[in-house]
Length: 205
Image (cartoon, rainbow, N blue to C red; front, side):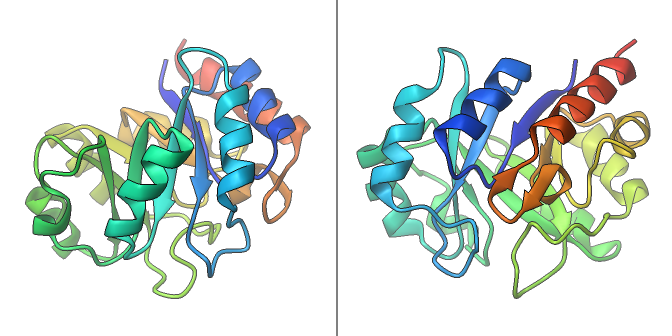
């Protein structure tokens, strides 16, 4: 089955609900401009509450030095860089890296190819202000081309209603969902999460 990361988690309750439904990872946002931003104390509480085999991924925007410090303090499993970080800034990073690439046009293929093979590419909608969580769907044709070439996480506007079609079209290693299962930014709707996981399971049959 396709791996699922539920991003923008802000509470222990939402993190545990995601884990119990089958999430492989939860995303904790540390970018101060995000409505889903966490302080370190709450992030530690969430990480400590996670069951075994569920990863905590920290999301950062142009915060490479802070990412290492926060990662060690909080106990992150991996980091996700969602800004304009150059390859040299994270090539030898001491945590597993997910690098977000905004899907614009065919140039996205070159941007994804430039990400070192040891990192995982995440494809999201292009938005230099929000940097994720926009609810906008990306071009699945471009995403599918990248997914055939390397390990890829698909994000951007995924909901319980379209996730099965997205998986069928792109065949990603994992999906990343935030606003598509929320009642408000940072507050997950557990009913929507159940519907999402049911759709993902259905796509695997």
